[in-house]
Length: 430
Ligand SMILES: Nc1ncnc2c1ncn2[C@@H]1O[C@H](COP(=O)(O)OP(=O)(O)O)[C@@H](O)[C@H]1O
Ligand SMILES: [Mg+2]
Image (cartoon, rainbow, N blue to C red; front, side):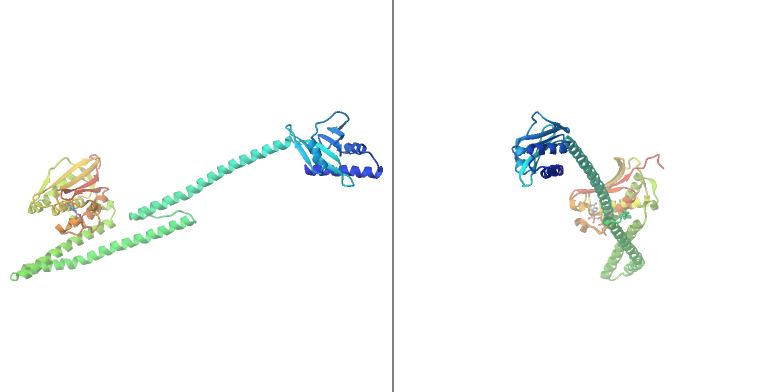
């Protein structure tokens, strides 16, 4: 608009200059007439005023109008006569723009005013506003999409890595791979390496225990044999006899420990399918175990109670399961006083085959119940009997090999109940 105004001003002053040259003393009205003729199409309307705000000429749509009075914005005229541009925009979106015109003495001698319909400008503004709004909405949408994408892209692998570390802590080693080249990918690779090393380390350790146990087995058998021989041959010296008996006892205990360690290392290596599973009636199996333990119970004046019930089937290795059950019955006897009762039962509970051994013995402290299944862990009460602390951990391994679990309930001074829970084998199932 300013540029346009400048252009009109230039043109007007050209007219002024020309008039100056041709006739020195042209009246202002003549100058205005000529200027209007030149500039009549400059806007929808064009007006020329003199320095006393008098309308000298007026054109509408390029046609010079000789009578009538248009709408005049006095304020704009006054501003223009002070040498400033001024404008007013009406409700009909018409722009009234006044331009001061100076003569050769730099006096504001005329005012040129043009009127322009600027509704197109408002339409344009509306369009720009619309485009900006649409752009902002689109931008917002894209940002949301991008953040969703980023969140998914990072939280998912982090969850995966968390899962892997959790499995590591349970000694379940698996390959960790994210297929990415960024920091998360590097982290995954690092975890993977750590898992491999940890696994190797644990395997080495187990192998070591297994090798040592094997190496100890033969010399231990010799020691056991010789001490037995010495014990039997020594008839005079009671003191020596006592020592030899002690030797026999201790080597028996060591042999038991070694055998348990070897059994454990066998589990570490073998999967459950190598265990020779077969559908077994746990009631029959448990009855046999009870029969084997009966004489030991009688020695301790403990009543071993087993009432054969309905057959309960589970898919297990019968030798190993007998071993586990015997171990638990052995504990029940070891940690009970004479005159008490040990009850053995088999039944089905919540779709599980259960072997339950209940004693009235010393009991296990509540905070130790969870720990007695750990290798080598012996509870505070363990001083009442000899043992390695391996028995229950072996039971646990055996039961878990057949997808079962051990449940221990106990109260100090009241007794302990140990249950072996196994998946039930249906009668029709082979
Ligand atoms: N029936 C039970 N009553 C009381 N304490 C028990 C019983 N069974 C196991 N325990 C406790 O759990 C510990 C671990 O048992 P186990 O692994 O069989 O080792 P141990 O060689 O001592 O028998 C035992 O030392 C004992 O403290
Ligand atoms: Mg034991």
